[in-house]
Image (cartoon, rainbow, N blue to C red; front, top):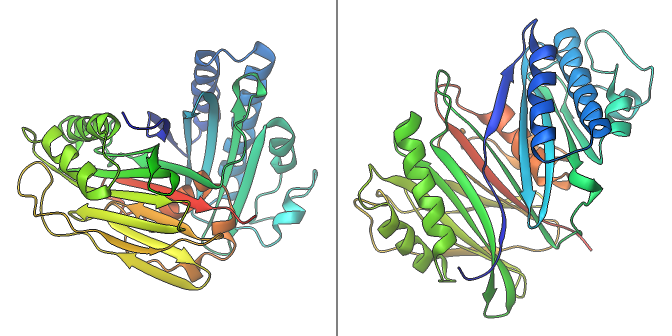
Length: 345
C-alpha cells in the first residue's frame, strides 16, 4: 500500500430510543471500552456518559438513537459515543452546557457532565430539527496530534439488517506536491451481508492499491470487486500542496466541496464498479482552509444545502457526518458518509 491508513468504517452499534436504552447503552459501551483496554475507572466514565446521553434522549427528544463504536486514527484508538435526535433542538447551546441547566423541550441535564467526562466532545443543534452530541474517550488519553485535513465518517444499515452495505476509508499517499489524502466512499449494491461483502472487498482493494490518482485507484477497486454484484464507488484525492480535491466516481455517490456559502458538486459517471464501469473521468475543485469535502451514498438525500446547517462545518468531521446523516438519511436504505474538513490555520 502506498501511504498509511488514517481511518475507516468499522462496526457501529445503533441503539434506538426506548425504555431500555440506558441499560443497553451501558452494556455495549462498557464492552467497547474494555475491548480497547481502558481502565475500569475510564470504563465507568464511558458508561456514565452514555447513560446521560440516553437519559437526555428519553426525557427531551422527540425521537433519536445512540451510535457507539471504536474509532482508530493512525496508531490511536478511542471509544466514540454519538447521540442523534430529531428535535426539538436546543435554543441556547452554551446555556445547555452549563451544569444544572434544563428546560422543557430542550436538552440540558447531563450536558455539562458529558463535557467533563470525555476527552473530546462536541454538539451541534438545529432549532426544531435535531441535535447531535459526540464524546470520545482515547485509550491512555493519547489523542492524535491535530492535522491540516481532519476526516471522519459514519454508516448505518437499513432497518432490519445488522450489517451495512456502505463503507468508507481514508489513507495518506505521497502526491506530486507532497503528502495528500485519498478517500473512498463505497455503496455495495443491495443490502445485508452480500452488499457488505462487496463493500469489504472494495475497501481491501483501496487499501492495497499503490496508485495515487483517483482514476487509477478506482480501476484497482473495479478489479478487486469484479466477481461480486458490484458497487457505486468514488475516490477523492485531497492535495495539500495545491489545495484542490480531485475525484473519480462511478455510480450514485454524491460528492461536493462546501466552502463558505459555495457548494461545488463533483460528478460521478453512470455505471457499476465491478461490472459495467466506463472509463473513469476526474473532476476537481478548490479546497481552501475552512472548506469541507462531503461524500455520501444514495442512502442520504442530495437535496440538502450547506446553508441549512449553520456552524456545522467548523465541527469535528464525525459530528458533521452524524448531523448530515441525522437530517438527510433516507430511512429505507443503507446510509454512509465520509467527511474531510480543511482546518483553518
